[in-house]
Length: 200
Ligand code: HEC
Image 1 (tube, rainbow, N blue to C red):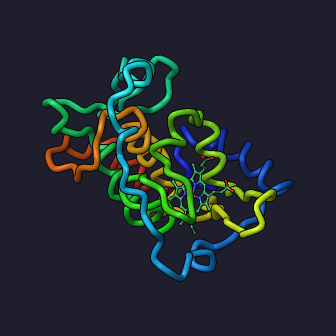
Image 2 (image 1 turned 180 degrees about the vertical axis):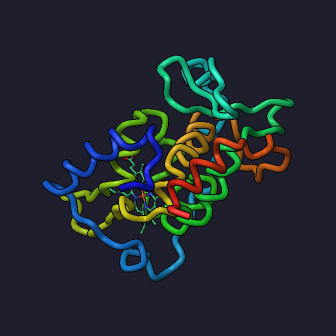
């Protein structure tokens, strides 16, 4: 567990404890749906949600990483929605490497997995990290849809905050279905944390 950054270690451990009791760990490779999903392209809910935008607003920045009033990581988009903080940009990239096969491009959802641009309207930071690490399975459903546990996947867990802030930006409507172009430079702190987390 040496690869976890300090900010994820505690919720991550709590999630692991939960995971070992009630959740089913599946490797992403095994669970990928064989066919392309029919994608949800309706992005009406990406309209800016003033309440969420206020709640998620960055009130503090530490070495290029932004935090909301509750002390959770958050996005920081400037220049009339065109310039992205490093973590939101990084989260966009990681999402489209690790999550979009099931959850659809831009967090829009698919027939296989829910639209995370909607889920992140109500999921807390701790719940998000817990599900990411421990997975989730809808036991009431007969069609065996499984969210894999990524707890041992560094390509996901080392970037859990990045994924969280990107999906928060989508959920609040701060970010539409766009590919981030202009971005803040990668902070030294991000380089250091990445190196420590990836164990290199
Ligand atoms: C193999 C397909 C698959 C992959 C890959 C995948 N997920 Fe999931 N995910 C699911 C399914 C299916 C569910 C719904 C599980 C349930 O509720 O029963 C889900 C649920 C979730 C939830 C809970 C949503 C809610 O409304 O409760 C979150 C958060 C989540 N996934 C995040 C991610 C992130 C972030 C990634 C990329 C690192 C990812 N998932 C990759 C299939 C996947």
